[in-house]
Length: 137
Image (cartoon, rainbow, N blue to C red):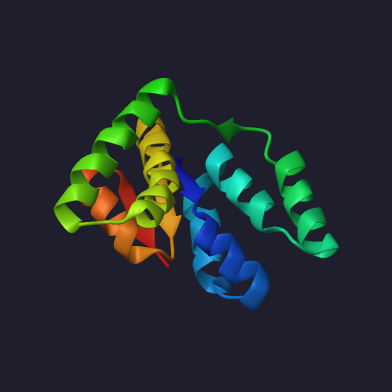
């Protein structure tokens, strides 16, 4: 069976707006879902209510396998952000936001996993640049 990593955008849209029920069912049938340490951190950072914090803490406890970026992933993310950011005149905020997406993509690529994301723009670009497989929802 193939591996998949859900991007932060999918969790947020699903939890807050109940979106992607059908798509997530299809993903669960086709993939073994693994959790990105970067995604878990992004979710924790944004969990501002007690209910949201409990949800994220439960996910963290449930996530027995947490895939983390390596030093090489960080190094490659820096190269990608420099090159892509300079070519597109990205400011500091965009480069900072893109870093986490790059780390998610590079970690997934290293494991041969597909990234499931609602963030088409960044992950389409990362797919083109890194070869990581992306499944848009």
